[in-house]
Length: 132
Image 1 (spheres, rainbow, N blue to C red):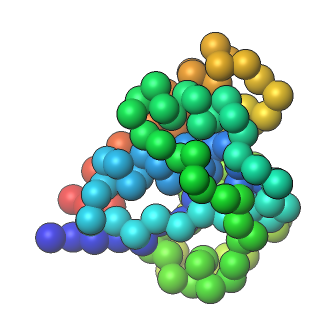
Image 2 (tube, rainbow, N blue to C red):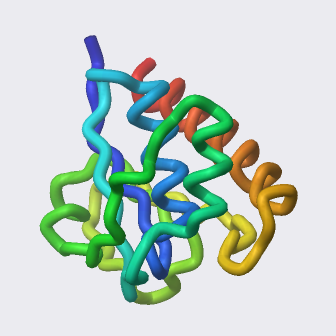
């Protein structure tokens, strides 16, 4: 069985990257190791991101925004950034993707759902490619 380590990064590690990590854990199961971090971690998760994921049956409420660590980048097979700009370190030989996603900060649940759904599709495609 193929396995992979995926790192999801966004600035505050409070919305997009946490939703992506939640989907990767749920959809990838024991075939993936999931890491996430932010270049400037927030104080808490975005409550709308938590609510949107709960609608999908995925509980991310216990997650805590983490600082992006160089060791996490080094340990990952794929590094997925979501608007962290130049704050993300680059190591040769890694798969890098920058997903242009709307930041859910300050948005209501109706605005966060399409972001969540976009993330789900991207995570599923990524897992299909990495675990093929």
